[in-house]
Length: 225
Image (cartoon, rainbow, N blue to C red):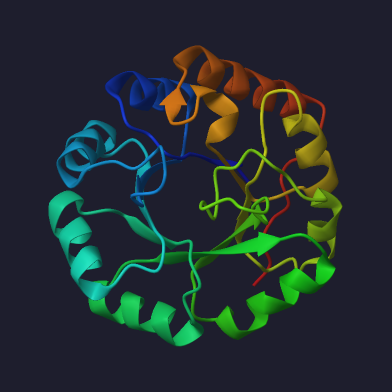
């Protein structure tokens, strides 16, 4: 099984091109005003076209209402919606029904008990994303450059499809893959030279680190039905 790799928070042609050159399976566009990675509808639509047919375009939102989601879907026609707020299972179901798109639901993790929150979303969300709980005082639900104990994910149901996120970079990705063996990974701040500024060289370095790590590791686990 091929490891899915999502580069999130993209805002420039150079960053998109670096992600695609590295072999990203997913590219993420963030629609959240408080984030330094926030992108306008027009820019997201243009960059999404650049990635069309090469990687899945993911629109990332935080407790967005229908009007905002309507505008995003109309402008850029994403392949997937990522809900990174406090959306309930009912809200996830509503979003799926309204747009007919797969939905990835994000969860903040600090300890094993945080993973219990996933259960009500099983059979509703198409995929999950596990990120570290934000530091105290942060306005951002993700992209904070902090990680959690990846070994917690080893106890998950093998049929659970998810992406590991939070504090990943070229220096620690080998440890993350070894400890959690995730089906997918998501990186944002770990390939930036400054908050919200993606560095093509760091993106390339990250993909090289993933390849090196995979060369010495078993293949990512197969999802069971």
